[in-house]
Amino acid sequence: MHNGLRDDSDLIEFKVCNVSVTGCVFWITQANVLRVGFHRSDVVTDNISITDCDVIHLAQGWYYARFSLLAIISRPRRSLQKHSNYTIEDIRLEDHCAVVAINNSEAKIRNLVFRNIQMIEPSKWPSLINCAGIDTESGIWFENVRIGGKKVTSLEELSLIVTEQSQNVTID
Image (cartoon, rainbow, N blue to C red; front, side):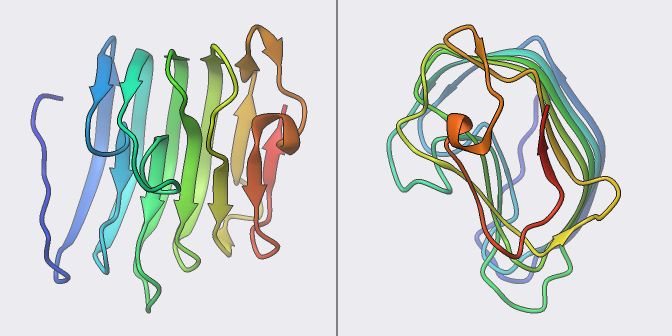
């Protein structure tokens, strides 16, 4: 993928499907590696993959939106955001970076997988999952996430805050 889309409007509604990003090096100066949603936009995404990539620098700014590999955000309202079938795997984080920042209590999320994520050291900022709409059968998985070579086995080790309304988040 070599194109970008950004709009600062509250009226954007779009669907993004079948996006694959492979073998890239990311040096981020303003935001996240992948940010989905903006203000009150209605976004539907499906079949998104980021594979075999290095994140070598992330800029500093407001956490839960910046500093993360994936951010799904929106201001609360009657959200029509639906996000399904994400695979984020074989990622090497060489800078302080949260893995995920989902701060959209009304979005619908299904089958979001983080696999083989390598972090040199713990993030300076916590990851966050704040979403009541996580699918009860195919939720959010973290498989083989490692910090400093050690496999993460708990939310605490990953510095992941999962709000009470967020269900079906698994670390394997």
